[in-house]
Image 1 (spheres, protein in one colour):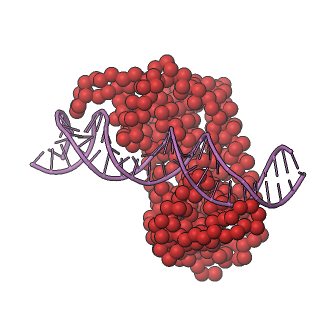
Image 2 (cartoon, chains in turn green, orange, brown, red):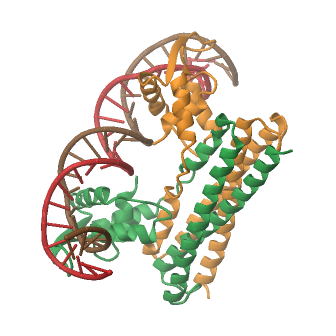
Image 3 (cartoon, protein in one colour):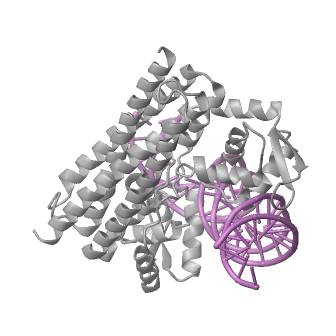
Length: 185
Length: 185
DNA sequence: TAACCCATGTAAAAGGTTACATGATTTC
DNA sequence: GAAATCATGTAACCTTTTACATGGGTTA
């Protein structure tokens, strides 16, 4: 749906497929995911379309790398995509879809266990994202009100992640209380 | 990834493909989406696998319907899926992924417009979900602490949606303030 | 010397969207 | 008479996952 555009966006600096995968895992991992087996063919297609150009370069460690650079056309395609209106309401939240059908089991103990697992996963993710924000705080000039555009926008989405996780954890607590009330009225 | 399981979950009552689509649009629309062109073949595959059985039935209005029923095997498959551990961290949030790359445009006016569009979309969705919760309140026996299992679990996910939307709207406001400070320091 | 990281890919299958095709009934 | 709703599907295409395949260099 947008992997080619995301790759173009990450190619503000020249990078290999392997590095782009790492950029996904570091910068976008709470927003999107991509496997190497998807990234490599997508880069090839972007090159066929003239949005990137690549050339092999020797690597300090390991085999030769293929380094991709954004072309003028790639930049135009990226900007056109960035200027589109936001798409809201297409999210899929598998763990909630499953929860909403768990009445079928008629086992509130199982529901409680599920909610507790969700809660600890959220707490762990919040811990990690807090660490990410701390790195931002130490490394970004002008934090928080005079940052470089790339860092500023990246930081906005980190804040979104933290707020979502806080909300998710509070929701888990609300649910656990309601399960308790439902179990022993 | 789980459409067959979601359809099995929605088939607590016999239903046609068309009705299952409506159930998606009403009950799961803030968690998952599915098109009719995906639902019909998936039901056929579930029937081949012995998880549902179908028979044609006359319709009061319009053409003949094909009504599906869950089999004992379908029930077992569903329960096994419902007992799996929750999968967290696979969500894809396209509008945030795009925002995180919008530094490329170097145009805070565009960022502000994007955030305002997001905000009003969230406000509208919250309005709709509040309506859904009001229907729950009026129609569910024992609301909120002695509800039927299906309704109870469905309501938990409505609460999740409302909390997320509240968090998303607050986040938009935080971002808009930061954009303003970034623009005129 | 084993495990891990670097680095690139291909192939098959599954999941999902868009477009096409058809036709009856009800409501305005 | 037109538009919306009811109702079922197929075909082509795109996206994503899973599994397979290869091999050099670094570190414990």
